[in-house]
Figure: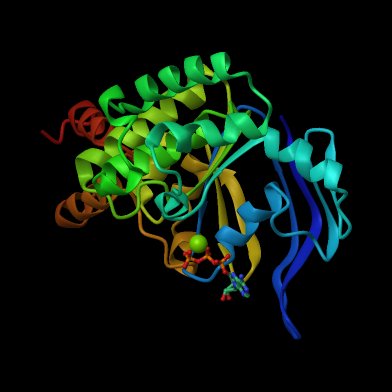
Length: 285
Ligand SMILES: Nc1ncnc2c1ncn2[C@@H]1O[C@H](COP(=O)(O)OP(=O)(O)OP(=O)(O)O)[C@@H](O)[C@H]1O
Ligand SMILES: [Mg+2]
């Protein structure tokens, strides 16, 4: 499903105080089935951009379309309802939204809202537990008795239980240990591929961008500064420097090796496998 931003600006209104132009003149098209990383410094507007996709934040100017649903400054309730069925959104620290007495009830909440039958809900819960690696013995436990990593899985399973076409993930692995992080991101990536989802993910980790994303949106000061495929992004050192973006570990290693040797490899490696291949092919090792 296509997501387009057409000259979108947006504000936050806190009672009488208006935070003007948090997002400014955004124009972009996110292609169906793509995996897009949203990157940029803190306060750049990355989370706000994601909120535009399910109508949590409405444009003050311009329009956002998600498939055939269009959001302008005045979104209808119907548009919001339609889009929330399609878009699964994991906020930063999604486990903060766990609330029910048991894991089962938490996972059943979204599907019940969308009028799934109890039988379908049971099957769906089995599926998402399997997908996210939640042991079914946990279903009758209180979500608050689980470890942080398990809570994160339950929160993400709850989002997947509504069977979204679009996944919007705000730093889904933040605060997890490296193993739990890899498991969650690999699982989301596999699901993205198997179900042909359209996925947007905010991350501060350039290795995540290199391993999982096709494209990247670079945000700074509430604007989209670049929207391009990941290889083009990491080939553009000036752009990376301008927005203080790191490079993936493999590329950083490559740059150190090149500096020591006073010579360059033909291609910029985004993963360790690519780097190893480059070093072997060009006879450096
Ligand atoms: N609910 C809100 N009310 C008022 N202002 C907000 C609100 N949420 C965000 N802002 C402001 O909007 C701007 C963009 O914030 P946003 O959370 O989108 O940034 P971000 O790129 O996600 O940052 P981070 O990497 O720290 O998560 C910031 O200046 C922030 O202070
Ligand atoms: Mg954020």
